[in-house]
Length: 140
Image (tube, rainbow, N blue to C red; front, side, top):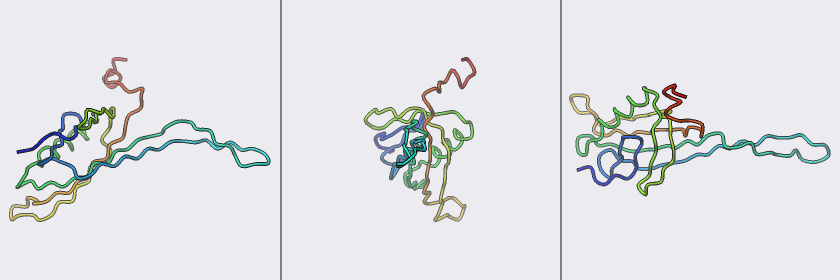
């Protein structure tokens, strides 16, 4: 049994058991331009946000709880280049995100080479406000 959905990345549901996560980190990068001034410290002018990166970490135990197939589907989505919506349990929509990286650390392999534990990290970057699905498809 997968348990309740706690977060979703596009069609991929993170559950309390199975394909779940152990942590979520967010990193916001903003930009300030330095303006040289005479006789005092240089001034700073805020030029806006640069990027926001969300890092999702988790550990799968495929034999006991499953989840390996979903992680493989996330890998396929990453290679397709299609942005995905990131939504939290409470329904907070974080916007469209592009999968930047997927790291895996597989361990405790059985005699057939299947891992008993698979720790993973998925890194997604938020797309700018000008993005739309229509622009992706070349309609506008």
